[in-house]
Length: 249
Image (tube, rainbow, N blue to C red; front, side):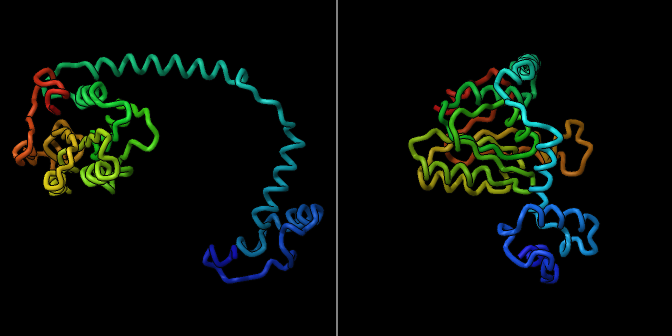
């Protein structure tokens, strides 16, 4: 089994010709000692379970177990709590900024303050995905859908449509980057045709990647205007122009 999984010839473990569970402790320990430098790594090396048994016995003798209680980590937890408070205070400066163009963290703050506690949030993009992970908390299990690694960009709007179909009574918000939105922008029309009210917020930086100096290829591609698609939409350039509640209404 092990050899086939590793894609190697199906050699037999000649020293143990029976299930590992029936081998004695002495046999396992002796086998580990005699095959520490095997000729064939996946053929003669100790089977994983036996090796783990030998290591665990050694660790038990070398480092006797100590009873661990919550108090054992109290100072560590307090250190993390203080650091977290400090970082949140630093982030709040960006979250509350009124600069124009709108800083992505300010956009995230607007969504954070507006969204329902049990909202289903779909975040998709590159720059805005990173900011959204930092700044927008989630309070209900299985109510946040991210695009994961950047290789899956473009899934935000499809995720949002699917979430609204599955949970029509829930508030569904899709936070997109402009390029990730463009990958599956036609699903915006799907939501309209099927009367699926999905609040879609698009962070526009005019191109691929987070490059404010526009020095990389594909950085100056213009801005899509989904507010022209037929449903209610607004193009906002100043953070204090329209609160999210007014836009969603």
